[in-house]
Length: 168
Image (cartoon, rainbow, N blue to C red):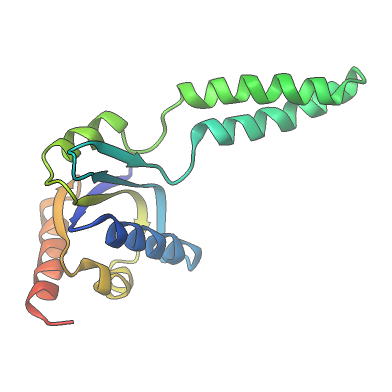
């Protein structure tokens, strides 16, 4: 089962930097993230979602690959790629994986203009190492939502609180 974590930041730059660090930690094998998305609220109050990977693009690429392979059977690989890419893009657009977009927009509606939030759908984490690596990005952050157990959520809140009290 995945855990959902949403951490609010003062600005989009910090939230994006935190997401990039999480992706780096995933490459190191310290965390397994199913989805990492950033939501920001512009000065005009408009809510924007920044997904880690576009389901439409992934669907189009997969569809082009399979369409090209099937097209080879009928000696029309380019036509197969075009049809496959179109079908894959449509399927990818219809598929919403990871953190629910409506949920992220609802949380974004409660945020201050100019702020941002990082949403993580985490499968596995080496907590002590990830908390230590994320320390520069937790200062100024605030836990907004979580599906963690009460004990785990309190440990995360405590880690963030310590960083607020300790000057960087």
